[in-house]
Length: 242
Image: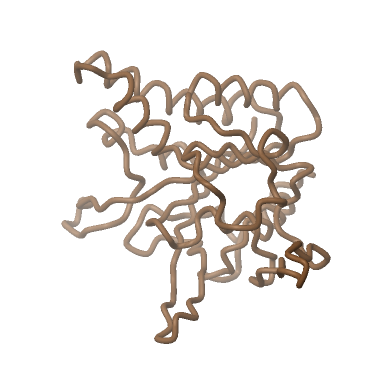
């Protein structure tokens, strides 16, 4: 079985950028006088072993050379295509990490572009598509592959009457399922906003009025740098996979 991980947060809090952040929280690429990017200190996610499925199909929030389209970046929001990609990764050996960014784009595009009538069957199809992707990772994927499901958040009222953050989904069926329940590890983005615009970005490793959670003793700190490379390395050591 593979490992499914949630990376959740509101727009602009580092969900996509985390691919390019070094484990120590630094953002290595610097632009040289000739207009090229200096990648000598880059230690973010390795584009040779990482596949970024850009479901939002928008320009990256980091230098383009890191994940070139057609190589380590694929533009699609079609759930059938995403599943086919995961099946191909499963049969191969090179790709170790897959980032699906965002699952909301998969749901929104299908709802807006394909659903002419929001019938019960249509909503069931939408729920089944997302559920199938996570289930494939959990039950059929190569055990050395980690798949990160990136998503936007909304508020829900928990059983104690408190508002908490969770993955934003389309339709009541997915709301009742709570897709995070299918994942052992769910990280939420957090930002310390500086008055001078020098913001600091983090991942929260446990619940903070949210559905956040990580495996027992996986992380020592509640807040860690928003570096997917750090998360990936820590999880591989924890689960003893390479």
